[in-house]
Length: 302
Image 1 (cartoon, helix red, strand yellow):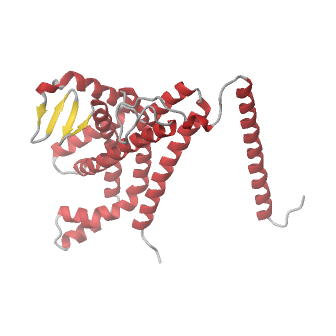
Image 2 (image 1 turned 180 degrees about the horizontal axis):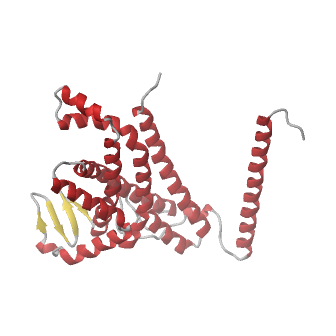
Image 3 (image 1 turned 45 degrees about the vertical axis):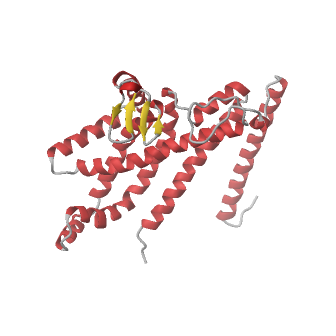
């Protein structure tokens, strides 16, 4: 077969590759479905309409075990997104403070920030979660002897209560543990971004009479965002992936809900496909949001 140019050859080869992959995928799916049907193993999305019979101990959205399975899946996704948003927000705020403290001229602040970063980055996150969860039950007092911090804030073995809003020990351990872990990486990213700004920017701001705090807010941090947003996005994606570890302390996230659904319905293939699809969608959404923001703060070269 003759090709007029290299572009036609490349298009033909790409089409051949895509067609081959599509054929292999079709054969894999049809073979798997046939084998499952011969063994009497159910397959198909019909189970999503059946009552889930899944008990979710705590959730952001209301849940009834008699509701459809797809509803339980949505509740699990809501828990995962809720945990991830909390950790992303808290680790970003703390990471900024720890990153600035790491560059401080004060030896105590600099040393404390360094210890936090080194401990957080060198411990597996699941170890931090299990340690905090175990510590929660050993250190905190019972409900009738709860520690009180101001009006409406109490802390006990039952959890943290803020203005009538109760955070369970599982949820609190997850938020604190993943925040400690993620903050170590965020702090180093922010420190590297700030240090990438030329020294002349600091000197120019000082020459205009701006103090250090205003220089950071008005001059340095806006420029550092162009450097830190891409690696921060990777950390935010890791937060979503690390949220699967919360099953170790008994928090009912999306993965825990799906494991229960799979064990009750025997639809393992469909369940795993749903798990892969949801986490892929969440991470792609985070990436799209970060890319949009990065385009907004990037320099426009004319």
